[in-house]
Image (tube, rainbow, N blue to C red; front, side):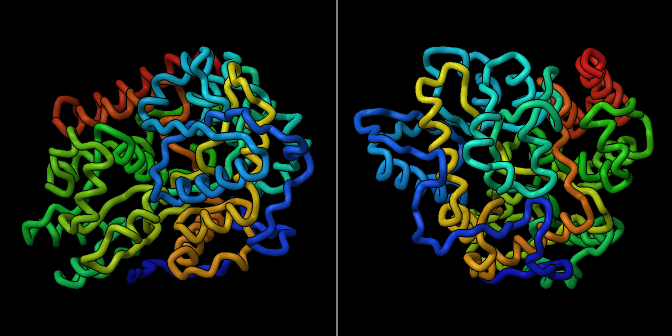
Length: 440
């Protein structure tokens, strides 16, 4: 796979959510850490649930963790895979039922993990953090998504989840299509618009996205962040101040997206497209740009075979969507909470973390010397650029339990033309304030 980096390559330096040094002596070291499985659990079953594909970086690494877990404990893993949207909708009931998995991947943030923590549906993990030393393996800043207070607001309180990878959102581009039309990789948002206009002038829809699922909402948030500072992020995500829904940040985002639809930069088909649909359009070489997350990267490396893949951070901005990855949680109805903690700890081991990195993910507890693949190094370098400028700004759907669906619905209205920019902002404000006013 050929790749190009559309930004200055950064060194693999230490920083929040970057690869951190560990004391492992090598990738073949599978000695349990303190607090690991000391007994024989033969005949026991651990039910693990997640929504990553087998070929994704996380899927590959966690399959390795399952192999190690079964070998060391004698227990058997019952792996149950689901869809992100399905678990997002069902976790409140599932995790509090007899059908609950013992350990599950789950979406981080106030409206998701925070809501479950506040209602007692997932277990606090403070004792496990102390036993396994997980906090020492997490870079500065990742604690924000692992801790929740009594109201479910992230950043303080008890540990309720364990992130073992990082993630962020950036621009994937088809270098061959850029070359074909003589377009330089943009270095600012004006350059993005100029590039998209050139593609449209040549009969090419430039940007693939999904309004039905997360990609367009994250693009909306990135446009707002391009006009914002950290105080806006804190107000929006942590409720430190009132959000101005008609202010320059949100108005720029909403009006820009509406304008891009009108100009043909974004197809009206985006209203009914899923994230998978949008990603496949890019992978198949039908569009030159796709704005989405690092969770696509491993798949891009394996599935993009007809053109040269490029990646770049969104130009001309300090802030960008991103955080620690989704977290392992232990449901309140887990039948094997002790074994769940053992499994989580194995996913944090250097050999599993290194495999995650080599497969296109962003590990949080690997030895940097273990990551030698140039594609992996390219992604980490891009991520470090964001970390070096303190740019990680979480995700737009985090503030309320229903905001993921609310934001998607409004984005669809914007694409369909059934809501003006002003109407879209009013709808979002009403959705946001109806919940946030109760916890601010």
